[in-house]
Image 1 (tube, rainbow, N blue to C red):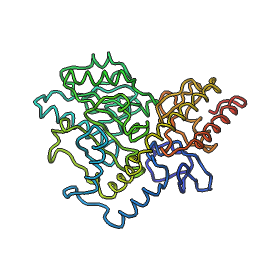
Image 2 (spheres, helix red, strand yellow; image 1 turned 60 degrees about the vertical axis):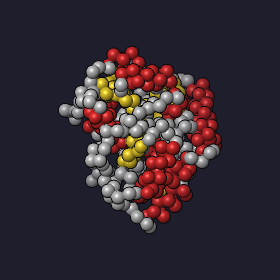
Image 3 (cartoon, rainbow, N blue to C red; image 1 turned 90 degrees about the vertical axis):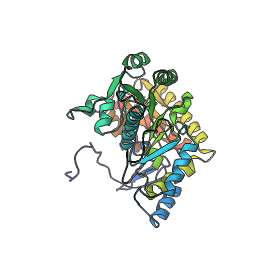
Image 4 (tube, rainbow, N blue to C red; image 1 turned 180 degrees about the horizontal axis):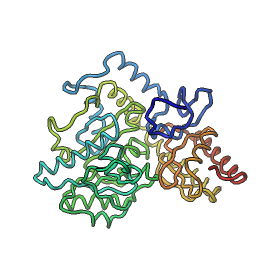
Length: 396
């Protein structure tokens, strides 16, 4: 089908008409269990009444004003994020890529204002994903992202994933910080080991560097804590957030300590739409749900259940599943002998929506409202698919 849209996506020929909780329905009325959640965005599922009501109520009041005026809903959301995290201050964006841009600028401005003008480089890890801006793809350094876009912005040193000795070796006089995803998403659902996370903090303290965590995919409750780095019991200097923070509304944020953000004074950064009243109303509605005392413990419970069910699935189908990866409701199964795109298309036809990730991984990012019955439903679909593959051959 020819469309006027720029052909930058390999689109599956399905169009969804409506969503309800854990499910999407296509134009023909077919029902799909959504374990993709718009790449982890729909944290409260589809058409959650709290979010719908907040959006509709605010739409009747005020959509947008310039950031040259106070936006009380933004002040409220920022305070709630500060009260429930390491941060002292927040800048709101429209996306994760913009939050990354803010973080990179924040690191550079911090050192500039401290009299360390040469300390502008960031150390990152291989297979990372930090958005699609030129700075974001340069930070990731993956060939599939950067090919054809030279010359790229400088200032990034990519080291092997999880290799703390390589991080140490990469630190030089121009190094200003370290930026990693606590759990790589696009790179194959790979958590950074706790000892490495803590070693990164120590290295930053010893060398006067800022530690930046990209929690755009793994944050906002996905692991059973508001942010994934909390499991390592360390404090970052800067964290980027997006996806789940808006529950489907385009919203991102850059959170920071007062010291790390000290260089970001009037005129150093901005966003026309970032932090507008409509987005802030939805963001606060998301927090209304996430801050309920039972919410995150239940996410942890369902995450443990999903990981356990996937481990059992691997036991039954070890000829296909080499490894179960992830933490909480950010999970993946590695299928080294199966084309992952073909596999996900097969699962989709059976009524389950997972996603592809790097390193031959089928990724699962279900809404955080998932229940045991939904997890069981997904496992039944996987079981049926693997049994069919065993009898009739692997999809290609």
